[in-house]
Length: 316
Image 1: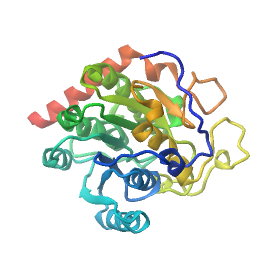
Image 2 (image 1 turned 90 degrees about the vertical axis):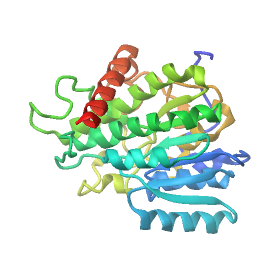
Image 3 (image 1 turned 180 degrees about the vertical axis):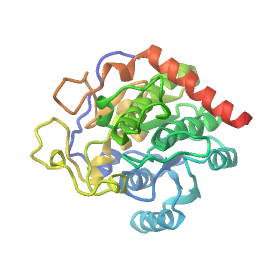
């Protein structure tokens, strides 16, 4: 694969529907986590519109069924199903993964939480790291055989520009030593998303599984921001910090690109924003990738640490 920066004709104002226009995913199987609202629902709609059989993996079954009905109504003959998945619950993850049958062509690790009050899983894991990273890590590993069986499968990991605010807190990932900080917790979970994509791409290159991460842009009004009382000034369209402020169809475009577009066939281990491969982060701007988020040694370290956490918890 070429190491040149990947560019496409699309940009920050492109919608997910525009990305998949002319793309045929007939016969492809896709899973989108967190697809009961927001950009997850819009990503699922775009994939279904292109002909994929889409599973909405959601905690909110009623919300998922409402989205599925809307997709089927708007696309006519779409094949959409709803399945329960709680990424903070190891039992739920295992049940979902083991119930999957047949190859899996597309997995969009989209679900996430942001800036939550301090909460912990039964294992004692900090909830943002557990949900945003560990949950998707366990789910994707659980679906590995299905992805490998598909040949040329794609895994899309939704990260955030928020990762530039902080690296992994290696000696205190779960805030057991230091006071909890909701934004530090969020930032490290989003850094973890990118590091996971880097290492998975390396490990699975021989299996034909492409894994890429992305920043969807700044999108106010989705459920992700429900713990914020009001949008900060930086969410306004005139914000000059470099990040693209988008509506939901635009926010889902980069996910749809990495999941479905032939323009990125064979591309793996990269980080995208605004439907382009991102450039290195420039201090003062809210875009690009931080060097620590694509460090291969850090990616391998996080993989080992994450696997140890999951295996230790399972052994209890």
